[in-house]
Image (cartoon, rainbow, N blue to C red; front, side, top):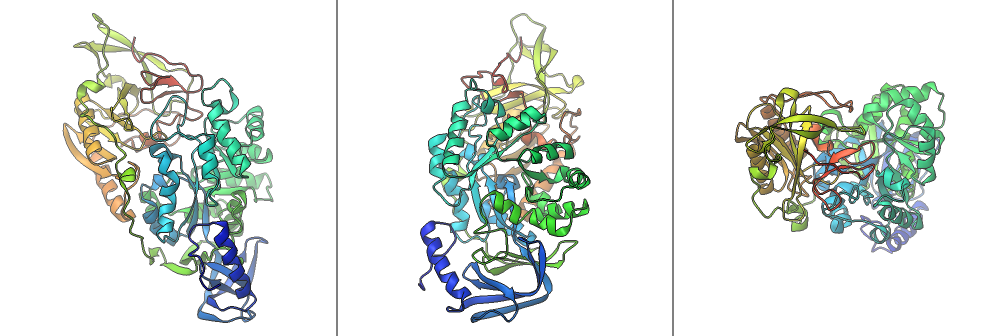
Length: 620
């Protein structure tokens, strides 16, 4: 029993060997590797502080926890931290690591010092880029020795709607295969609500096939209930077996969903209002509550923190520190059925421990992961595994031709001086589009900057053909001539989007993006003025957070010299200036209705109402 597994990737046979060894270490019949003694320890199961405790570690796991001096066995090493308080490693109940724009091994170096030791990866971003390699991608860093435990959840939104296509297509059989891995906790957020409730929706059978395969493996079906606020909708959502929601906008909405059996995952931008509201309502049992990071870039994390920031925000809103810590440890672990492995400082769990210098302010002194220290303060002291990502991860922008200005032209009917155009704006949560009379010149429908209307386009990056859909959008884009912005992060299908004041500038931006394999390209007055590379999946970069942050700062500095058009929209986080959030303006999930997608058989021009399936010409 001395030849034990490396314990990086969970599997049942290894788990038996590991636990057979752990129980003998707990009894003192085999030696431990090390003992960490702390001033006090938070038992999250009972929400009580235990004074002067020892944590006995064998391999990557905890074998014994109890009062100092009571352990009956021996250990090769002892560490004493009398002035620090131990709490479990933080877990992220719902996060898209892709939105950090770092590959998983560099994400680990960023978030481990901030207390994050495990993440439930909502993987529909990379799933949509390369579905067949999805699980292989998310387990690669851990297999290479990364101390961040990533539990993938295959994407339900692959593709996001029946009107989209690309790098992945998941249904019952694919999900059944994924669920064979103990690392997979269930199904990523089910976002296509019209397809869930409507049997006539073309995605209905595919989605319910994935849900069936998840149920069969006793996995968790995560939900996405954006815009569903009436009692009939909430009841229907819960009745469908969708277990959670992270899209609550108000405390009343969170309260209604909580009372109807949903596990609520509160995001930081609505957290103060929701926490205060739930406290005012007298919520005593917070076991059905967790804090979700969802989407947070590496520069944002460097600035404000990771899940530690969520905990501090909850404490500032009035939640007791111990409850706030439960919301990022035992609560999400229970929800995801991971309590044998993470979520508490208890025997059998990974030895993931956050050592706090001060509990009320959540000041982190050190973090241990897999039974060893990995940080001092916010400085990562571990090792980043060196991974040679293969071509399937690094060559995902598949456009086998030069994009030209003509690809973005919108032709007018012969003899017309004006044309009617369908116009939407970023985050157009409305059942109708605008109809605007647009000028015609040289046989093409022109932009109308006086009305803050410019051109927005989607370029498919999966077929090799570079198919283009285009239309007019209002309230965004550059006013300066021959200026364009392009990006390969376009939630959730992740084709290339570009927005610009001239067709030539848009073509230049997309071609440069194709050459660098993804990321950002900014063109100003006909010249490329800033680029950021996301060479892995077109979503992430294999480098440190600090290096990526430097490039993003340079992009924003170049963008600050440009006159950006702006109008308010339905989304509360849509701001004037550099339109970075256009990455999310191509979403097609509820409550979106009229959207632009890459040309598809069901939407030949790409303009479609994803709630109804209705299409419409972009000009007429």
